[in-house]
Image 1 (tube, rainbow, N blue to C red):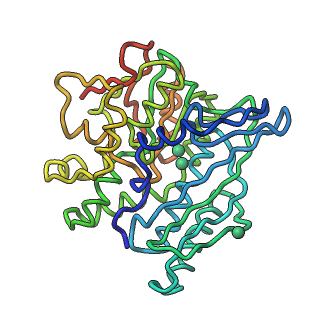
Image 2 (tube, rainbow, N blue to C red):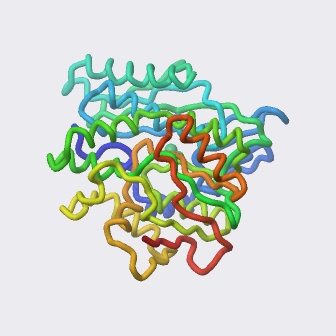
Length: 339
Ligand code: CO
Ligand code: CO
Ligand code: CO
């Protein structure tokens, strides 16, 4: 049932914008972060030392193994708490499952994968809700804690910062290529390993170095999430696509025509804010729009901290963490892409 799975199944960012503009935002001084800055999660102050981070994510299968799907979905849901500098604590299961079409063992395996990944993150799943639906969908609603003075948001990027990405790109392209049987087993394994990998260690490094601006890279692709960061921070962002680490054969799969539909929807959303350098390589451009499932953190590190942050990320096992761009003063378009 893996046809249109993972974060690429998100509604297009353009359509989402159309819908959200009809929705009034609640006004309350304790709401510290809401959808106004397109952040990964909402944040609500309980008292001066404690705020709650709330988020949810769910999607159709991105791989055919139900246990792995559960792990990936949970890692992805919890990631939005890490991206905000929070500590995930509690979660609820959200499950849609076609009971008449699939064995109940698959249901149990998805939940077990989610449970194990949540446990690894120190998250307790204390309830949930199930609907009979096809195709299956799974994810979590997650609650985390954060010190109100230490929230990391899309709006914390400053001119002069370097942008560091903690996981290689290409999960959208690799998983689409798997469905077309165009890609090696090694690349599929690596994509799945990365999607299952919690953003916990990357978040710990961000907290240690007091990083203010970050997001995780998921359905809107590197370019889409970088654009949201640029808009919220009122800056421009330069992405050097040649420096972006890629999973295995990602680059060459584009030569073979493997560009998922979600990439074009993401491009359509970003296009009016995009300045492409004249020599920009087409494949690298399309990789910027590849919808990631459970992608890495994109953090905005002040120049004097960048080397130490990078060294700590590598030490934490995120060996492909790299500087992939810079934050500059608002200069025409929000997003500048070069090779
Ligand atoms: Co996110
Ligand atoms: Co999310
Ligand atoms: Co209920």
